[in-house]
Image 1 (cartoon, one colour):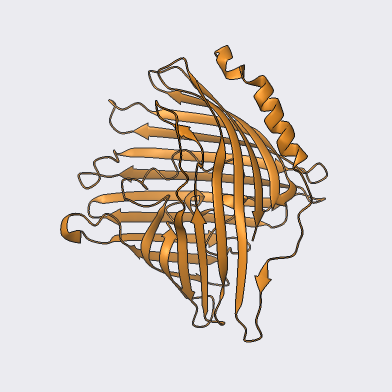
Image 2 (cartoon, rainbow, N blue to C red):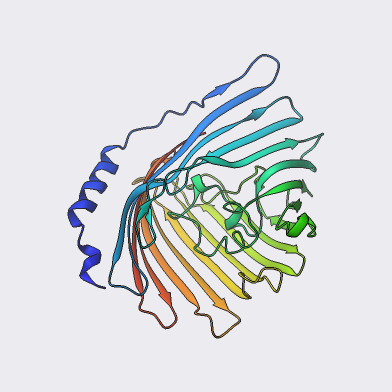
Length: 365
């Protein structure tokens, strides 16, 4: 690797020191209001400050940034036992310099999630309405606050921009439920997708089935790791389509406690995407993401590794892969942690590129 990657040694040392100096125990209490009528309102936030150094493709330059990867305000609660809601804003990559000019992101804040849920009775049927994260794969349905690594797989949301989704979110309605002793989860959504000229395109349909060997995850989002607290094993299949676009995905997730508060996490996601003539910017491709980690409770350390691979059906397009290894110090679990990772990005016909991420997360919800 070119020595330019190591140029900002003092900067990295200062940033790392500042991150660890900020380490402080987080309180266990939630910020929640509970009136006597059975309703509730809960407020929270997610802040991820990040330093990164990434080789720029086709040049001898290295892009260095200090910015907020995510800056979110969260609001949720229930009106009564049947009606609940979740609302979230975001200003992603706030302050990050991008492009040839290095212009810093202005930090426009927008609504990222806004879901109202109706639950008439049992967990067998929930109706979600609003702006929702698409369940195209397990990884794409995970909460950003509980990810195993520093971020999602690099190709997890390959379908998002072509479908005019906002960071994987789309507008619509979804049926969601848990059957057969909570072992089977189903999700079935009708979404806006790409509306097209005069908004006359067919709607987007997205469906998912997931078999839970042990405990079910009944929230809007899946977990990335429970840090040795829960035993979870699931196998999922997903299908996403609009007009002649489609994505088929299969995935598996295993989270297993291993004595004394330790635990390991393993996830594998495979998807086959084809935008066809409807989404020409989404060429036919196969994507794979595999990640694993082991939480050491006594040290509050979380070593992890993530591998991704993107193979195009068209030989004229350059396939890509990425390997990322890292270490998290989970000083307050997901409420507060520092993660450092190193990645190697490969593209057919190009030199490999290096990537370093250092992230401090503060979370409360």
